Structures are given as structure tokens and as C-alpha cells.
Length: 311
Image 1 (cartoon, rainbow, N blue to C red):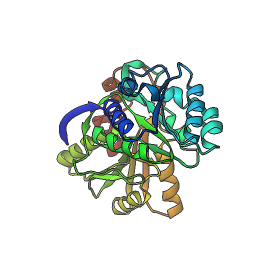
Image 2: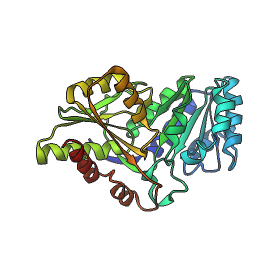
Image 3: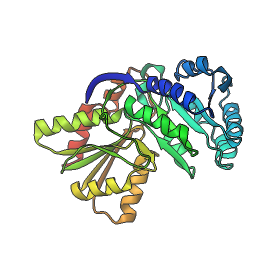
């Protein structure tokens, strides 16, 4: 882990400008929050490919679908909570037509902190995962974010990119390469495996390291930034090795990546124990630190839940 700490959305903004220069088909459809989503630099550099749609996510999605069907590669950026509320236009304009749109859901989960529950995308993965042929990605750090944006710019798949505003540590190495459908084993272990994406990866890794030094419990940690498709092979391998799977998600406890994992473990006939940890009731307002402590998604909370699970 490196000392550098930076918000995911900052790296997204930088990467978007880079791919805008490299791929002339890339455009941004914004919903009046270009500063918050860090699409403002793209707006300055490529004004003819930046479309301000106002506080009208449904409009932005429908316009982007048309642009995509004419050969463009649109990124529709808004708060994840507002963007994924547009279930009908996502279905009718994008998915049914196979329009290759990238949805950029910013400010997801508890990690947005003081913005409060009216802004928190707590069920965005649950909404997007039901659609066929839609990829879901949540980068763990800025290095991975830049690679993900490059991947999305040059492909023609429908995708949902989940980006946070909270500063995150660098967890991927300089030689790390993002691949869709692949997880990244950050720490090996023999007693249990944690599967997480986004900010909870760092708190999970901290919890795993502390359990190793304090109690000798050896926990593996997987960064599953590719949520759909996820790395089923890696999860099954680590499940067979440890016998215990602990899924952590900054999302309501229902509807996240744990649903995929639980189904595949059952269908595979794998003998294992599974625990899912996420947000169990309506989110409240507070700082990221306060909220993670309250919902036990910080390293101490994860340690306690793991110890309960492993009894």
C-alpha cells in the first residue's frame, strides 16, 4: 500500500480528459453536477462533446442512448442515487436497444458522509445487476480507476461505473492491470476470505492485517472491482481453501455482489459458510468515519463481525 491518498472521482476526471483526446467518440452527458462528478475539466477541454442536460437524468439517458446508437461512446454522469432511480429509461432507451452507454454513478454508499441519506446510493448495484449484458465496476483506488476508464472508453458494452468522493489509499501495485471479470487477491490467507469492492476493501484489509498480528487468524482479502461479471473462479478457489466467505459491501445488505456469490456457491455444491455484511437499515447523516463506525464497516467493526462469524 502506498502513502498516496486521493478520491476516486478525481482520478476519473483526469482519465476522462485523457480518453477524450484519444477517442473522439467519447462524450459526457451531465446532470448539472459537473463539479461534483469531476467532469468539469472535460467540459472545458471538449465543450462540443459535453452536453449539459440539467437536473433531468431521464433526458440525459435517452439522449446518450441516441448518441451511442449513432456510434458515440457516451458517459452519463450523476449521483448514483439519482441515476439508478431512472429504471424505465435505462430499460427502454439503453438496455432494450443495446445502446452502449456508460453510466457513471458518483457518491455511492455511506462513504459520501455529510451529504446525507437523500444523496446516498445505497441500492444502485441492486438496480443495475438485474439487467442482462450490463457490466458493473467499482475501482478500489485511483490507479485502477484510470485503467477502468480507459477500458470503458475503448469498448462497446453497457456499463455502470461506481465512483466515490472519499479519499482512498493506493492498494494496487504499479504493474497491476485491470481486467473485466477478474478479482485481485491483495492478501492470501487460510482461515477465511473477505470479498469486497470500493472503499470497504481498505478497511477489510486493515482488519485482516490486525487479526493476523493480534490473534494469528489468517484472512485473505479479494478486491472484486469487477462486480459483474465477477471472478467466480477465484472466489471458489479461495472458498475451497478457507471454508469461510465474508462479503463486505458499502450498500444495503441485499442486492450487492453477495447475491452472485451465494447463488454460485449453492449451484456449485461448495461446502462453505457465508456471511454478508453491509448496511442493514436506512442510512443516516454523519461523516464517513462516524457512519462506518456506526454500521460496523470500519476495521474494528469488520474484525468483530469476523470473530463472531468464525466462532
